[in-house]
Length: 346
Image 1 (cartoon, rainbow, N blue to C red):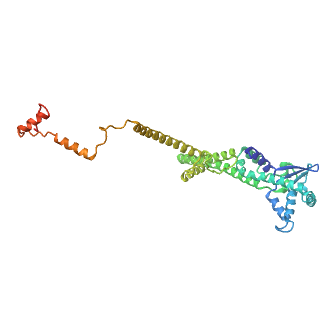
Image 2 (cartoon, rainbow, N blue to C red; image 1 turned 180 degrees about the vertical axis):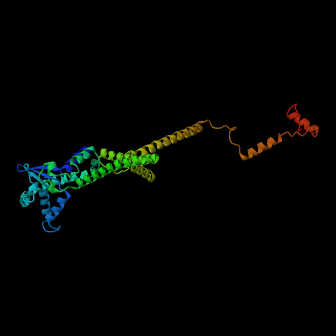
Image 3 (tube, rainbow, N blue to C red; image 1 turned 90 degrees about the vertical axis):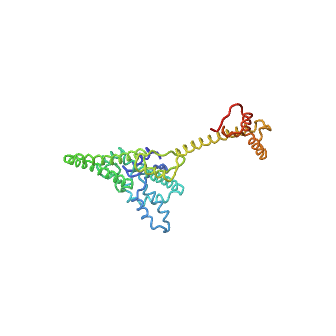
């Protein structure tokens, strides 16, 4: 159900006290309505104790009787008590399939009524609701002088009307409290301007938070439970309750569509980096395998060849003592190996 449709039904439900349904039966137009809580209790009382013989049948017939409002435009609400037996016998004698069709339509109407539960609070905060409340001048709704329907006051108010009246009275009390608070702060500012300013700021912040929340509920039509799922984005955080819900979601590690998108993006970067590194290693290995094989001079020496090479290098070492300690033989050997320049140990 859309919000506008729900608000339209709630306006009728609160102003008149019921929703209507028309059924054509043997060229007669029967107008039915929804049942309120008080009528439902009467239906159970008229149908006898639960479990008694014929209790279900009596309950269904009484449900249809109490749902009837008009027959071919003739209002029977104010005559329902006097014509109860006549109406009960009439509906008990109609064909079973016709009665079942009527009862099925009433069940669908009842389901439509139940779907309005989620929208009643949002409707109470709308300008339309407040205007209706002021037009009633604080009187109860569904009265004959307001609706022009005789006998409507005998139905009693339903649960939606009770809730609506309660909320509007609460809003009236808040408005009166704000006026009294403003006057009190004005008087207090004469002796303590700084303290009065602080109190006014605190009160205004609290009131603004409540107004923002109610405005959002009125626009959405209902207070939606925050259910985080991978298929949706995170809801915007506008109120303290939503901030707490967002923090709890993060602490529990629940991921929404945004978190999964970022996670997928980072994983893609990592996979791309791993792919590039793998391709680089494969290119290096391919280059190594495709190079010309090593020659004999490039091969790795064995342990015996390494020892022989080291011994050969040690024999070619030239030990040059200091000039005053070198013998003639050592000097001649040095010149024969190095050249004409002698570097001494000095």
